[in-house]
Length: 211
Image (cartoon, rainbow, N blue to C red):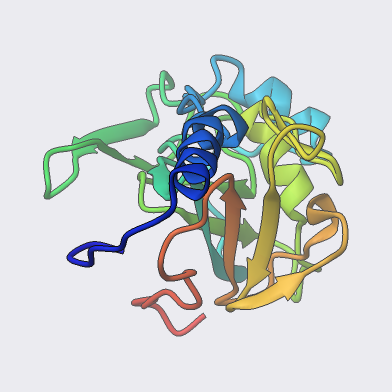
């Protein structure tokens, strides 16, 4: 203990010293932070995820969920432009107010440029926008397919439960199923915790929209 002094017999002191020297070898090394940018083929991956891209936004069904991914307590950015062809003439990108990324907005594109499941900016909000009334929720697995990052009951990207801990929380409650099956219900907060957890597990997001 810090600030405390104790006296030990020589044999006891040697044992404690030996154990303390052995501990670093047993502790896990810090995880390498991943590099998961927005993919270069957003429409191809949207189709792979089961969506039919459109040339504009349709807001008959319009809901939002929020995703946090933390590796050893450090937040992994969920990129802007997932599910959006940001190179299309119908897409405008403006710098976010904090100057750290882009906010992509879609008007009308000459070709299909938008998946119904997408991210406009790097705040972690997953937008579900459809021309179908009461469209059933997409899944987190579909979003990760669009992202081009592996997600199943064993792995998130290059991180797998065989070598590190992976926990998933929904609104602060532990989720034990396959994260790919999570339905992106309105205002759901999803936290994927890889490796050493943060001091506080995200359990909510302050959404600015009613849905």
